[in-house]
Image (cartoon, rainbow, N blue to C red; front, side, top):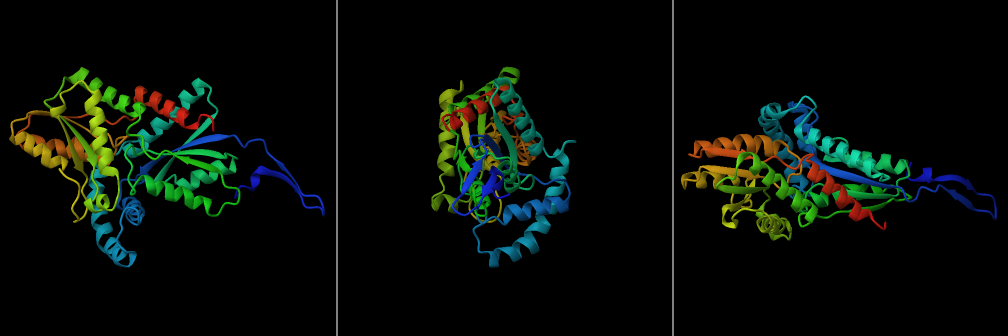
Length: 349
């Protein structure tokens, strides 16, 4: 509708130009944006998802004329085949874990907003896959929501994640006459709402299972070239770990940072998570926990890569006990804190 639904009556009589606007200009909405997921655990759906993801110039900075032949002739056929068995192994009856836990978060927040009597609409979108950012923004705008808070669900900022969400949201605005007002949360790793939810998640796990010898804080990796170009992601990760060390009831020297999910042949951030796990096992460390604070919902990278693959690597290297501490998902502490963070960002708007 391009924003024209707000104007209920336009009179173009000569010498008389009057607009009767709706009184819904203060309607507020929140859009939670996650990375995305294939619709089904088959090669066709995985290939479609990967083609969207790996075609994003924020993710792959190689010129299209060079990258596309490699992507479509080599990467997509190989990766979709390799990933199919991995997705099948973690798929839930309600879909992929990322979609399942994202919807759980959304529904819990909706319920909490109703209990608090907050007149705020909240929706979910995926940067790649469905429902798309453009689709949800179009729907919200057609319902006259003029103030939309967009939260890329990446606690640590990166141009390849958060900036890509901003790009896509602004792409919707290019063809709109009566543009809604958008706000973005750039990062939230330093928010006490986020940090306290993380500490609660880790220490709650320790109350049930006991403390490990080492806690590994694993982040999704990034090519070093991105950091050298000015991406602040690495610094955000380091500061996240420092905040965790400051708040948690655990010896600082027993907390280590690592990076996972390396892709391609470029040098990536180090140390890798699996390298750290092998090293610790060889040094005689027998009991480790791994937590991935960059993922606010569990997904392929946490369940299959860490909880399954990394576990096997540690145990095969000589370790005895390995535990993956689940992501925040729909934990009550995180839902309450996320609600408070949203309220803080929309107050006086």
